[in-house]
Amino acid sequence: MTDSQVWRQLNKVAMRRIIGNALGNAEKYNDGDLGVVFSEQGVMSIRNHARQLDDVAVGCALECLCTVEIGQISTELGLSVAKALVLQMGAH
Image (cartoon, rainbow, N blue to C red; front, side):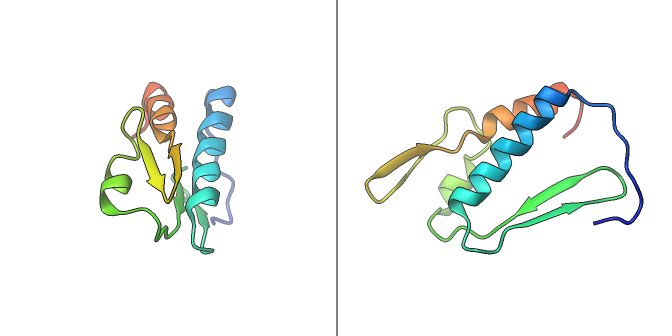
């Protein structure tokens, strides 16, 4: 995390949804090593390991209506919503 303040003018509602969505998925699928980093350029990175997700599930996580099955449970990752909101605000 940076020691200096980083200011951005962003859509507050969209940012809440993006961060909530990303953190919710990271919490649900992490192996206990969740990390959140903010850079001086205003970039937020969320990282975690998720042994229960295979390469196919991770690869499709940002695609629309991606559903993964873990055991008998089927759940949508939902990161496509976060991606769409990020793109609407002009980020990548």
